[in-house]
Length: 166
Image (cartoon, rainbow, N blue to C red; front, side, top):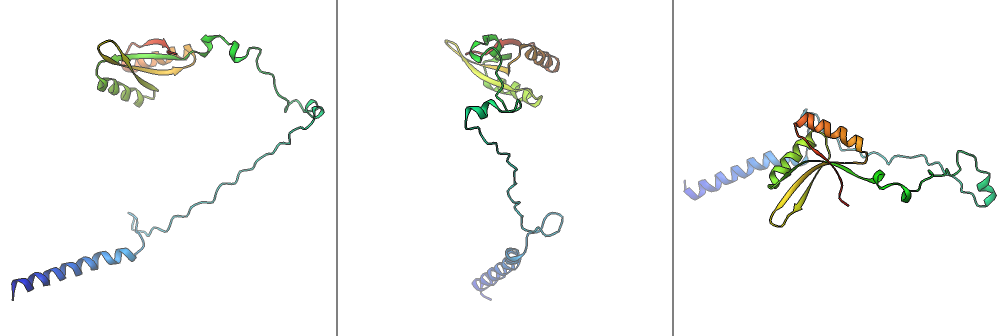
């Protein structure tokens, strides 16, 4: 036989074999790893929520006659503007400052795996950039102290308690 004819026959056999393998896959149902057929996914209906509607009062008399449970409760004697600034401070635990960002990221990943909220912030000096690693923020100084103790116990890092920059 001619060499060209042999190549054509081999090509036809290869194409026929591939068609015999892949064409049935197009028409069959998908089969999962367990060997069972996977049926089409059924998308659940939207959840139905019960909404309690409240009729708003239309006159002053209706507002005055509201039951105690629905009346507007007066806020604390101090407004937010009058609260001391120490109540609104955010506390951080500074656990390190690094010249190389990769070192800061490494410490960040370690602390995140332990469940601490970690922030890396760049600090610019006249010549260099440093990367500050801080845990927090925490609104309560005592809770920040507890977090600092946990970090020290788990990682042997003596962090520094700091108030957030404004």
